[in-house]
Amino acid sequence: MTDAVDVLDSTLATVRRILDGLVVPNVTEDAVIAAPSFYDGPVLLKNRGQFNNFVGQLAVNLRFVGYSFEEIAFLTVRQLSEMYVRDSFPPVPSIPLSDEKYELHFPKESLDQADSRKDFPISFLLGAPRSGTTLLRAMLNLHTSLWAPGELHLANFATMADRARQVGAILRYMPIPEVASRCGESVTEFSKTFRGWELAAAPVADVYQRLHDADPGVMIVDKSPPYCTRLETLERIGEQFPKSTFVHLVRSPHDVIRSYVRMQFHRADGRLFNPGRNPYHMGEAIWFACNANTEAFLGSIPANRKCVIRFEDLTAEPACSLRTICQLLEREFQPRMADPYATPGAVAVGAGDLHVNLLKRVEHRTASAPFYQLGSRCQELATRFGY
Image 1 (tube, rainbow, N blue to C red):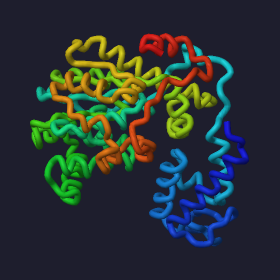
Image 2 (image 1 turned 90 degrees about the vertical axis):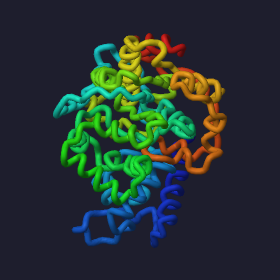
Image 3 (image 1 turned 180 degrees about the vertical axis):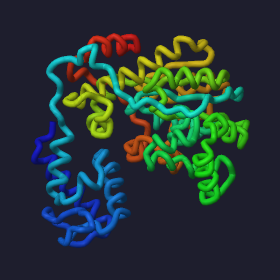
Image 4 (image 1 turned 135 degrees about the horizontal axis):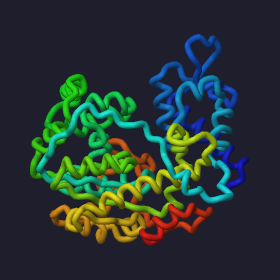
């Protein structure tokens, strides 16, 4: 691993470069980045808009996510950089995760009313966070008869009021531009419609019907990782959409766990775990839950409605994996799907992994060597997927 001093120097330079790009004057290592309005001293970022822009740039450049204004307030440029270095490399666990500690504590979903059945074809892209679902979504969205938007976060709720109460502000409104385009409306006008659905507690099933009716010849491919965190959600999706198909994207648990920690997702997911859980164990539990739930659910789905794709195979020969998916979706393979970076803006759409926007091509990723011992349940599941 790079020496911590070198990492700190690089991080300091990156943070200063971000602030310079935002045209922030008087940037020094000891300058306070942001502070509440009652603070009388000089700060670099004068308002929440500037701060949000800064945090977004941190996420893109440093994979530095999950930090709020309250956590960064009063920190200097150097203190923030030191916090990044300290939190980026938590200790690797010395003992495996015990079987009884795979339990996650997801908040119970509040469902106001039952969803009705919808008989139109739709596909769901399922996979744990950090498994490559954003890349695959971008590939599928290039097909002329598929619509694979950024994360919709719809199917895990019964009504739009449920969704409004339980989805954070950023993800809550992230889909609006893409959905407005699908419906042939301006973002301004559609935003009013969207808010109306929330206030009226419109059934999510009816929203899907509206999206389908907007262009019936173009199949919806819905990619939202939270769908596979609960088996009950997947079962409800299967019942609600009897003509649905499912693409399960899996990736080596060691690579998912390493990426999960590097992106500091464990900070945002702390509410799911008992205090003191090692971040690597948290990533392991997330990988296990998402893939075990999906495997269990797909066990009851006919073979002609599902396929399993390994991320390592997708990046090695994109066309081969995409042909398999297109066959499932009853679509002809279109060669441009294999290289989404050749189409400007194809990858940077909607919610998803910011990292893929920094690449120039699809990079083949082989499964990394294990870097710590997985728990028995995770290892058994990984073995079934060929890892």
